[in-house]
Image 1 (cartoon, helix red, strand yellow):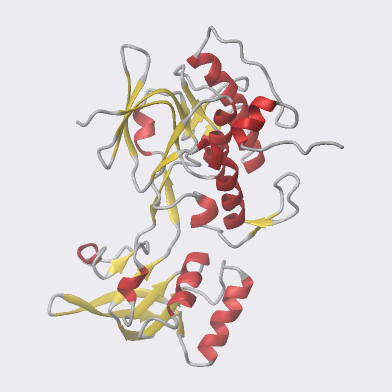
Image 2 (cartoon, rainbow, N blue to C red):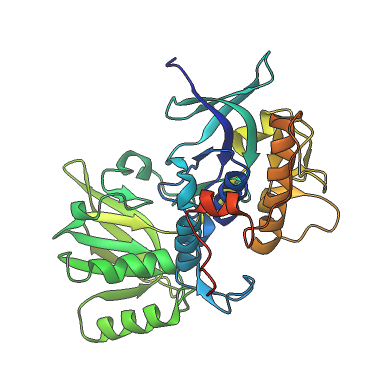
Length: 347
């Protein structure tokens, strides 16, 4: 094992609450490393509803999931958090000196004084297509995530799903792929209305194809996936030739290794107190949708409140001898310096 990265705080989860946790810790001079199982920052906001409007963020009448994440990233920029993406926290062990040794699926290790679990409802894994033989083609011709759009250039692409990810990628590849076929089990979509309207216009113009049905079979040629069978609601089967199959059936949350960390778990959620949002293990905090307590409401704004109190609790845990003073970003010169801002002079 390489020498672990030593830090005061590790945040598990790079969704909106995890990002705001970076901000609250930063105000208290606590630097953080952020780990997430997804390949990009943003959590559910980016994976599930990047372009859908959110109306209940205080002082922001409306913003998309993508805009919210972009604003949070801008807000935490002064604190220079380090992100470790596309990897899941697999082990967490308390050490003799009270710190926590954390290991990830990419064999990275951290030695941290505190841990913040902000993993939404757990580590997200793509929902897979249950079809015999498909596993051998995953990441070769069958994909649940697009990591390199260039590899689909001039290919015959079939995309399955009815949400934003499926529609966004279908529209993205229309002018780049040899052909694009979108398959959904019903003629009703969960994507942004403007995306659905644009998709239907392109289908009418013959620039892409929409099929209502489900994939029920695979055809191989020379060891490669060459065709899929699509069965519609009347039981009729149509064979579609393809080079690449992109599946966007959504994400399935799994508590995963967190369940084995000795924390108090209640109905697949982590029990916390409401003064510090600390778990049953001192030094480990849980904020956002993954925690549970009396009166819990699964709202982003609730997670922001939890992150603030957890940060103050962690500051006292890290340096119990230090007097932690509540300062306001409006008036504190110390916080202005940390944030890289200055008040306008009054003439």
